[in-house]
Image 1: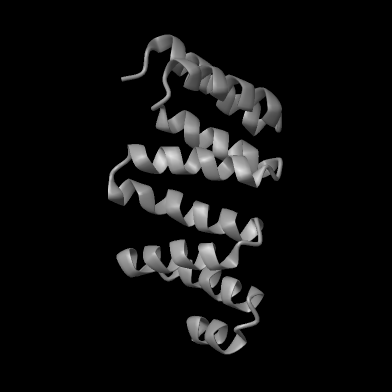
Image 2 (image 1 turned 120 degrees about the vertical axis):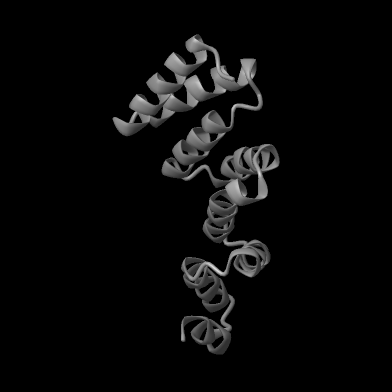
Length: 133
């Protein structure tokens, strides 16, 4: 359970992020995480802000921490984001591992587009096109 003070700080971090003040929001998220390292909401917000600033290696760390703290079902959107993060890092093989495992667990067709993109980036155009049709 989050303390009232942490909730206020988290709301401020969210507001700063919505205004485009990503560095301020990151700073607030890190302060929250210093006191509550398992604050999943703060980890998600931190990852989102880091994505906006193209700080993808840091995104990976925040998402992996968050994934460890949630149920399997709650991890699905985080895993999708992690897979997309690996695409941004040009690490297509790792992206495929994450995204294909996610698709096998969920059957979520939205993941297929990112799988197809990863195969295309690896010049596997035939495999890529099979994901879409």
